[in-house]
Image 1 (cartoon, rainbow, N blue to C red):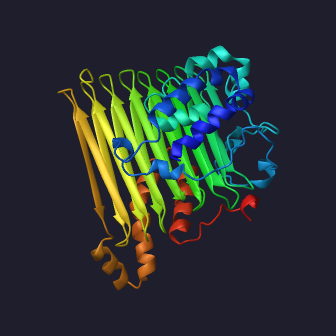
Image 2 (image 1 turned 120 degrees about the horizontal axis):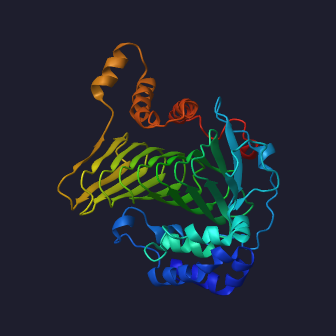
Image 3 (image 1 turned 90 degrees about the horizontal axis):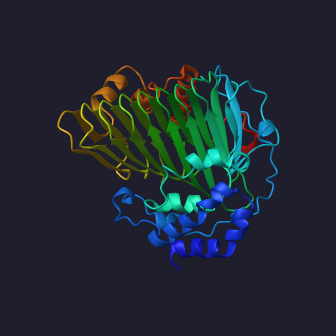
Length: 447
């Protein structure tokens, strides 16, 4: 049996069950997503955007799914203590792929702002969700998005009304929790109206020593003159497979700062599709990867300049040790009418061993003639001269290596706007390089 057949059979047999535990708006696009998935199948390595990760192999194992929405015995507010010092956040939890509603935090958010279960809001305000859901995350062009859309039953909705500024960072902890090997399909919908501002910190953690397969689709709509900072941090374990597709649409004069940090994982595949729909918009897209053992991290990005006078900057850095594999494929598309585009795409990588592998493919596709665009990539090892300099001054080889690696990735971390988060990540990255970051401090779930 090929990998996709088990999911085709699953949906054929359990479609009514999936729909019964979801909302009509989410169900309305489910059958089309199934048809799109059935027609495409999992992308092979011959598909340009998937050439560095064998998707069919990742989905081949037989995972359990909680389609009946059985209650997971965990109270994350009591079990999970992973606050970033000095960063006052509005803290929410998603357990596997369900928004945790039993005990919502006593945090102040401005009037009109909604942070809630996607399924619940879809049932109460179907017209609003229908306007945005599965609109920029197209199931006809990506099989993974189609699979997520046909199986996702709940997730997170964040809505920020016009000209409202959310001062507190919205922190969302995604907890993978199960007594058996489990597949989860999580959905996130973020809507920032004109002039709205919000910052997010998404943290992925696996609380049990089980194989997890997590698919996630994030759709973010950033209105005119709105501002979005979206930080995604993964600290799972070696048995975890994470596949995340992020779709962002920017209107005129909007600003986006998107940061993805992979500190601990098994296999990770991050996709970012960002499109400029209005003039004067800007985006900063940054990534930091630290991988060892046989970990695999694949970041694939598409920045689509559809209109003039927009600016995009990308910086992705990898540090690979042992037999780790990294991949970066970034495409900047400048369409015919997108004059005065400014774009910079950079991928820099440290490969510490002979068995580690890095694949890099920065791309520019330009159809306008009045633009300033550049791209580049480097793959190398630690600087021998710098190592020698530090060794001559009494610094051990291990400590010298750590200092050089730490300095290398700091450039990405320093691009984050939240100072307390930057400080926390400096601390976590140092622990990661020292091999001490096996679990988050204070996380009772992992003990």
